Length: 416
Image (cartoon, rainbow, N blue to C red):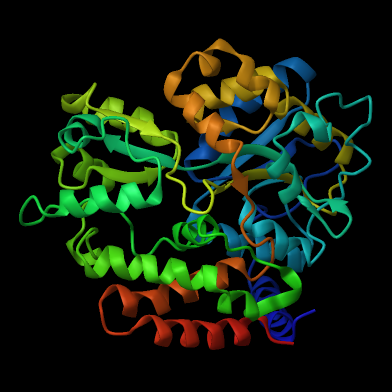
């Protein structure tokens, strides 16, 4: 274990234990009795929609479900409190990047006995997207069930890019940069590519497209690799040449696409419906394609998992709920409710997904994915990367300075 992380986690647990001891128990974090309803923690708007899907499960099985939608801004703190007090939900929803951190503290029930069990026919490893399944297999255990996946593609204005001779969008990173340069020269406040300066996931995905890989046994040395440097040099080119706007000058990607000031940006499938609903004036003037290739055309695959809390007394019922959520028909229902991509392969055979040309682009992109560094410190490393890259983006530091500063910060985060 890493000393830095152990100290941080121990101090956090001590704090939440103190708060729990001093405050009153509001009943929200107590695992319900064996005969009570399944308690499920959902997150944000997805938690609210999950409550509707849970009603179908209740009708089919007779098992009652109590879904509590937690706001994202305090969900992690609430889960830390649950780990410390050993009073949590039976089932919890989590983004995939949280799983390594909480797996380390034995938050989850090992699902290995349920996967491949004939009583839970939908819980088979081969049923799920391969990368998504790998993201939940840690320390020789199946920590959670892939629920839905997230992957980005390139959104672009077909009419504007057609004027540049590229109606189908750029196929390569070099073509993308050439287009972005030309588009940025159209006049004041005109750019070529929407790159949010605070999005560390996008920074890391640009790194993997330069051929970078994160090797767990190399720690901070991963950030000295020449492929990682290429990503930093790429960001320097994009921002210092005005191909993308810095944070305080930028617009929301959908607005910038609609008014043409930023005709290309990366986003997920939820953006398709948002553009259709909120930008009808450009209907038929935009499209989506797989990300332009550099050394490869890979992208990170993320998403959300469903896990069973380690001290539940309703494990079999909770597994039934997961089995229901992994049913291909349920996966399609969830897509219709949330525009989230199914993690179950068979769900993609449904005409609602299979006959949608834009969704097939995301399905194609899912075949070219890598996992983010599957380590507890990933988000911490990402936040520090944003801090270091801000200086480069604003032109106050060069590539060498950013490389060295980030290497030192990463070394501290990952140190023994």
